Amino acid sequence: MKKKILLICGWISFLLGMIGVVVPLLPTTPFILLAATLFAKSSKKNEEWIKSRKVYQKYVVPYKERGGLTLRSKCEILLSSYIILLISGLVFPYIHVRIILCSIAFCQLIAMIRIPTMEKDASKRMERAENLLPYEE
Image 1 (spheres, rainbow, N blue to C red):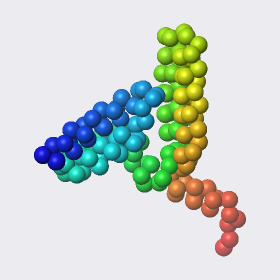
Image 2 (cartoon, one colour):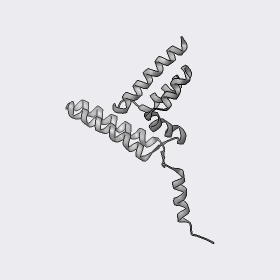
Image 3 (cartoon, one colour):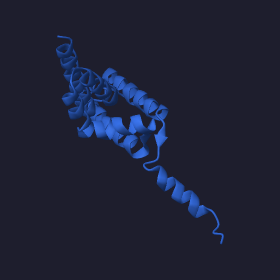
Image 4 (cartoon, rainbow, N blue to C red):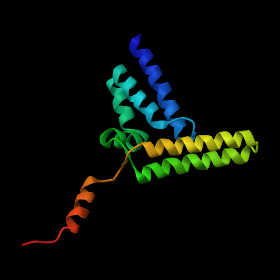
């Protein structure tokens, strides 16, 4: 019974994470992390399934491995959110809705600033540093 409840909660969390990809109010990464944890406790098969999903690979793995996101990932997340917020603002031309949407956009920007920015590949950073050193024989 406990595994079934964990499985149901995992699916709900996964669905909220997927909705969060396109709806700026819902964060994607925390829901996918929660789903992975719940799936891991309910069944190994479900854990492997969620870890093989593109959204897990794109948002969760870099964050877990490096403790942050690349600048490109941050920009993609903000751009997609801002496009949806802009469309929402155009569809609902009420000033109070636009103020709320601007507040959401500002909070998202602050959240992205607080997440550490990582380079895509640490080895590239090392190569650049080595190229700056003078060559000695």
